[in-house]
Image (tube, rainbow, N blue to C red; front, side, top):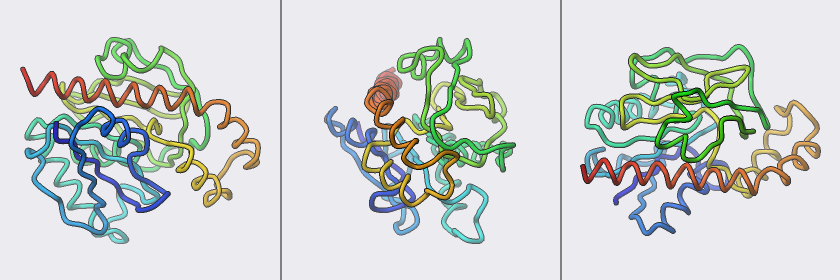
Length: 235
C-alpha cells in the first residue's frame, strides 16, 4: 500500500516514530510530508492510508502557522474521499476540525502517563480493540481537546478528556501518543522540562519502565490500522 505520514516538526521532536518504522517493516511504500515546509506530495486519493501526527502548535493557531488551514482542507478531502485516516494528538484535533467539530483548550492538561479506558465500542473496534486492553496507561502530552464530530463514536476516555473516536468506518483519532519512541521522548522531556507535572527524573524513570510495552501497543495499533486499510481497499 501507499501510506502517507503527515508530520509537523523536523528532527527529533515529531514525526511518526514507531508508526513509520512499522510501516516500512511491513514493506509498505511510505511517504513523509512535513507540512510546514513542503507542499502536499499528492492528493489524498493517491494514498491507501494516511496517518497524521502531533506537534507543539495548537490546531487553531492559523495566525502563527499559516499552513494549518491548508492541512485541514487536505484532511477534509481525505475524509470525503474515504481514504483510511488515523490521527494522533494534534492530528486527532485537526481531523476533528476538518469534520467541523469544536476543538479548543481542555479543562486540564495531560502530560506524562495517564490511565485510559476503552468504551464498549472501543473494545469492539477492529483497530483500537485489536491493540489495547480495556484499561491501559498511555503517554500523553496535550492541552487541547475536541468534541466528537457529528456521527462519530467515542472509543476511549480518561478522567480528564475524551481519548479516541471513530468517524464512519475509515477514520480513527487518538489523543494519546502511541507513536513515541525513546529518541522522541528523550527530546520532549529535555526541551519540555518546564511543562512536566513531576520532576523530570521521576518521569524518565517511569518512562523507562513503561515504554517497551507501550511501543508494542503502538506497533499493534499501527498494524491494525494498516490491516483495516488494506481490507477496505480490497472490499
